[in-house]
Image 1 (cartoon, rainbow, N blue to C red):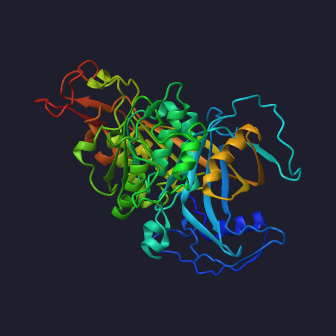
Image 2 (cartoon, one colour; image 1 turned 90 degrees about the vertical axis):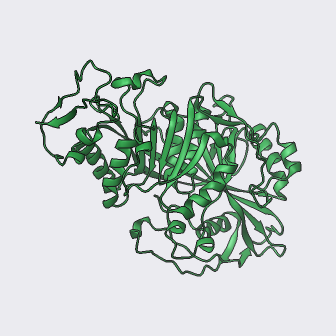
Image 3 (cartoon, rainbow, N blue to C red; image 1 turned 90 degrees about the horizontal axis):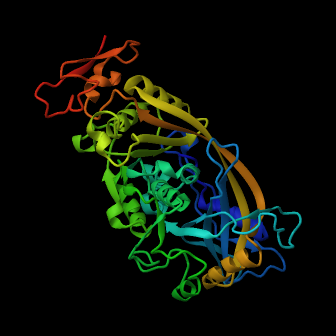
Length: 484
């Protein structure tokens, strides 16, 4: 998982952008022993004191900090117009000297500009470059596990309980290759569920004919508080500007998304996001799953796509991840009776992680040598643009601001800075010899012959090349694969 940006660091960026002269930030980070230091997010207690610039009276205003993410053209995927905007809302105190974060982070999936790309940006500050954004396709506020909710020593609060850049890169990856999201989907170590949910939504929006699913929930969270800052009046005024919550774009051939994790605390938080994300309850579920435990029979050969977002960050995890993925992933459809399925593609294990993570290479090697899987490697560059803060009188003005952005400003937004992060990807699939049931005899990691460069052959159970019913549990004369 990528390092998360703390509330304090975000606050400092906002203060700098809107004209802060000084901001006192107390330090006090913790580094749990269960995670490498490079994977740990610095946690600090937020400061509430600030001095506003002269002439800038922001008392009572609402300030939105905004980041825009897109894949660079150098990425190993088809170029896509889709972007993801991240927003965090702050409330300025009545005295103009306090800046307080309000609600959860909001993530917005945007499409490409509708009109001529050659349109010039509106007049503005020439010293700041302009970025052009498309219309909103999906907008939601996602829950995270914070330090105050779980305690400073909570593993979940420090790592998987937050939303990081690798999950955003993963969602944009699937927007560029939406055909990968199909059938039954399983996300491993899903955290609060953002990666799996946003990947399905992005893939659905990128489909020629997405399935718009009906969600009976309104814009409020379970306590009745509006998490994204849109009151009922603002929502009524935004019918043609902001997407309706009963129109969540999903791939038409998505059967079900299962978000899994080994930590119940995380799954409890993840359940909040499943209820508000706009995906119907019959198409999304949760599962307590530990890849260090034996794979349950009911999970084997069940999933068309398995997602992993930076899950191989420690070498001991490689063995369990590769074994779970190999057994849970559907076999090649051209082997056995699985060809009867409407889907003629085999299962695919898709992983996205930091380019510098050495254990990702170990995971690829284990899938190849231990489970005879074919692995295709790719590369992503995620660009992040720090957009100029949006300052409003009230949260009810957000819809009007979006309308002005698209109509008057032609989608252009001032950009304060830009950064880039590199990720590696791979897609692993089963070879033709695995039929979904013969893993104990076919996988070298299971037979104890991993590393043996020897051909395999079939013993017993009829004609392996022609008999579609070979090696099924109900066969009285079951054969097996052996290595010569």
